[in-house]
Image (tube, rainbow, N blue to C red; front, side):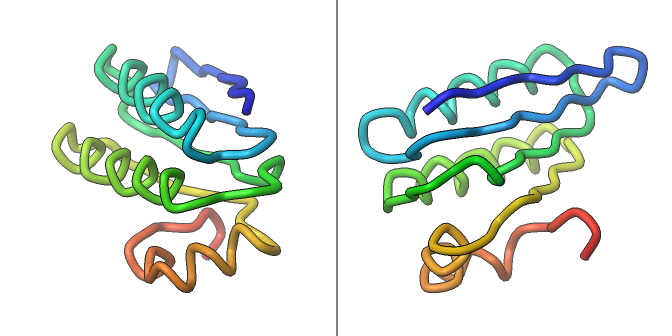
Length: 104
């Protein structure tokens, strides 16, 4: 898994473009990398899953923890690019009900 951060420091926002597999081997890194940026004062975050091919329960755990951390820090958190198998896993995990999708 790779994360590319696109920052807009003027608006205190960033987009995290994720690619590859979000699984047991790297879900912790996803959580840590995104929450570390949030802790540096960003107020709006978009997590882009358009490059993710595989998501397992560890990835779901990371997403839930990111949501919780964002709420604690009053960060506007949105998601985009949730399609295919990743969308199916999120739907089966009932996570689509608690996330805010960009453009929805």
